[in-house]
Image (tube, rainbow, N blue to C red; front, side, top):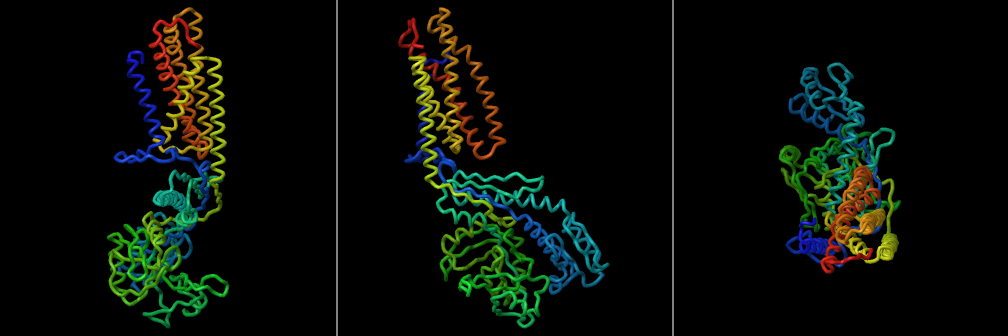
Length: 553
């Protein structure tokens, strides 16, 4: 450091100070046109800024059901392609019995060998059971595979929620998975959403499964095709089928928008196939667009394979009803007027905001399983402002107390420490702004601890300088010895603390991480200010008093 001319070292200090200050107050994310903001760029955490804290539980059993539906659909299609079953027989030949099992019934024993190949291909790893020799077979997902499916569902749900929250524009969100209980699959996800202005809308986007499906309608015997008026109760619907729906059919509700006698909206119930023709996983993209008749709609594009499948389906079902389902509710049930390929439109009297939200859900992908909120806490801005006021007050009081002690005990050298300390805080806030770190209430505690450690480094240096002066060395020699002999000690103490802080960051969550982030950045700033900045200040003083015989310390 001594080999660097004093002028260059002064410029380095001023440059670091200027850059740190700019990072705090100027938005440099867009380098071409940086914008000066009224507030600082330091991001405030949930405990300071206010917002929502949510705990969600993933309904992992839904993932098992979805996997069984997928296996059933693939087996059904392959049996149809191999001419083992006809299109009319397919829906009854392959039926999902329970959440984790599929029953395959063959119309004739001649296709058994080919059917076994199909089952082994699409239900690989499942347990196969012969219910009736040469005719009925059941495949069941084993327990190990069920656990893997649940684990995958939670992981995928976590990533999908992160994508949705990010696309919605929530800044500095914290989304983590809670640890499992008793060695089981952890099915809980925690979300911290600071500064959310419309929490109900965000919650709806997060919670909604976003599972879009197109399903074929099962016509009752009395209505073989064409127009169908869905009844307003499941009992009426079942009566149309002689008292019970076919095994491959399920009743799906559609809100009518008309209030019933109990005040709740009336529902219409549609008899739809359990296995979907096309699902949301087949979507390539979705976006909000115009609806010529009702304002807003959601346009979509399917993958090439799904587009071909949908084209084949609509070709063979012209004049029949195919319902669009979102999260187990019917959005609309239009009649197929012509062949539809890979592009289409979802209508439903959407508002602009509603169309945007649905398109966002579809783009981010469907959740692998339904979720529900099991805990919710709202931190109001008044609590955040109160936390900020108390935290800032504590920091200022601590800072002033340290400054007063240093000036009284070390006199002129104490002013050196105070200047280095002030620059330490500025550098720390600049680093937090640059790396988009979040300042939390524990982070303020880390800031105060950093101030203490920075002062400790100055105390070590000053005491060594005092000792050298008592031994009769000149001021310049004493300063050289003070910084030179304490340097390794300062590095050692900071590096060991950095290691501890890094462990807190890697293995801690929430408040612990906030404390660790501030501590790590503060320690890095402290090493620079205690060793480099303090020495530059001393050298400036010595350059103005080259023959100084005394030092205010």
